[in-house]
Length: 235
Image 1: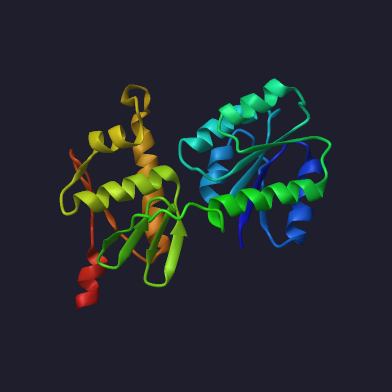
Image 2: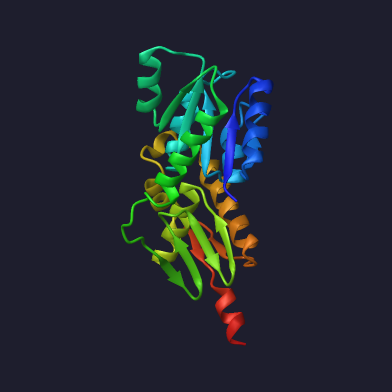
């Protein structure tokens, strides 16, 4: 079941969208804390985002840029703004489509299906995707997924990049500076705790696959993949 995340501060419109999409078999997530949009994005890993422009504190353009730093999932703007420049801004900030209010639910559904087909279905790129494998663990960097045994978890762009670095460097250590350079263009403006937060998220994704202690902290150096699951499987 594909997940649609609704970022709309008008509760009536958000509810209307949710009811309609639930009717057609989508899983929907409504964001209610508009200062924590990316937290919801990380938690639910949606296949598509419906995003209003006029939001409290940060506008939809800002949140689309944050999403684009980590994911290429389709983003459809929904807004009462009807100016041509607003639509240009939406596309230039990473949006894939634009719907003006008031809207027809049928039009919204048609555009959602179109974007999902382009991203994941019959119109998606057929280029051969990369697969990194280590002792049964498989990482699909372009798909933003990781699998082990019969289970699969979705990843954010940064989580996939961290795991890719760990797998490529194993059994060597992935240094903190190397990870920061890979994940962020300008290390000078990255909070020292940011990498720690992302490593914690990566560890939780391994735990979801039934692999505890998969990321080892090497004090003063960085992090290393700990393939204890492979050793235990040989016993």
